Amino acid sequence: MIDAQAFKDTLSHWASGVTVVTAEHGEHRVGITASSFSSVSISPPQILICVVKKLFTHQIIQESGCFGVHILQKDQLEWGMRFAGMIPELEDRFTGLRVESVVTGAPILMDAMAWLDCKVAAAHDGSDHTIFVGEVMASKAGEVGEPLLYYHRNWRALATEPLSLPQLS
Image (cartoon, rainbow, N blue to C red):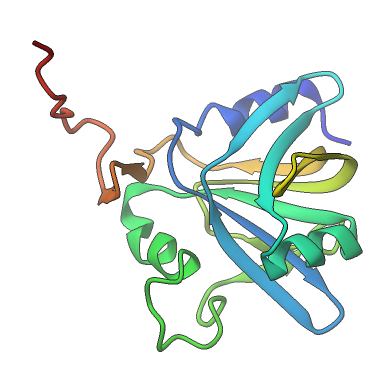
């Protein structure tokens, strides 16, 4: 388990932006973009992710008992698109990326702006999805950069772009 300050440093990179969840079990390695990720506690360092049960990723996390969470920066737009399945001709979403196993065996994208290597501490049934609580076993926080954001079905490269909100009447 990592210490609270390392965990806080890693989460300081997350600004409700694009995260990628990865898992591996046997010969099956998977990665998807995640829209639901949050911190649960600092001591012990824990996070949660929600994964739809019908996804193969759900089965892999359930069987392996571990997963990685990666926070992307603005220049990793292509990463976000590949893990969202927006590049269908790409057979292996991990192709060309530096991937390592750190503690749990989950595939970790070493060049993400920040990452967390987690073992499943609890799983809560949410009807069509499962809320996996992960105990953070290792993390890395790179230099603070601008996160890659996802807003209103449009990929955004900058967190500093003003958002156009509808006028209320």
